[in-house]
Length: 160
Image 1: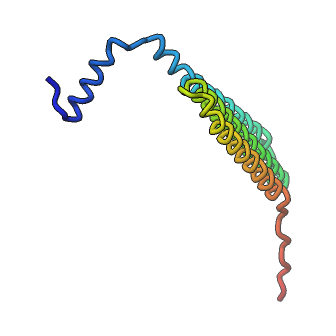
Image 2: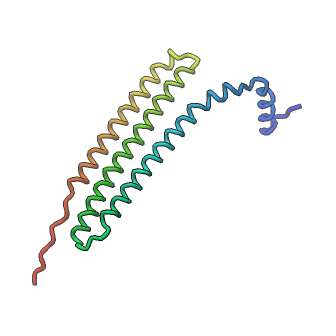
Image 3: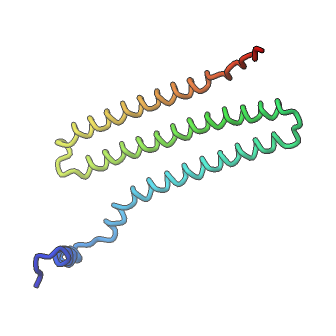
């Protein structure tokens, strides 16, 4: 009945597997992915609301200002707050990513046919991920410190 074409091979696999299909099992398998997506959506929504509030605050602060220096100071403070918010958002996203990675490794280890054989691999993967996370956080902190330490260049005097 079935030949060895890719389409027919897929059809045979599906027809053989159909009686074994378990909707509850499928729902359980998809649940972690749904939770991960929800966590990302919640994080993105929270970060967007923070950014919107920061922009609105800056706009309100600038309204009615006539002194250019005062406007400059407000814009400078807004830029500094924006950089801090960016660093925090990046750290939050990094934390979520690595947390989900660890959870995935735990799930793979739990579902592995020989969890004791996979345990050392899981341990090494988690250790590598933790090291990467620490290194990334250190790099972000150094970058934020470097940006914070930048001061405006002194104006050169014009000589005639």
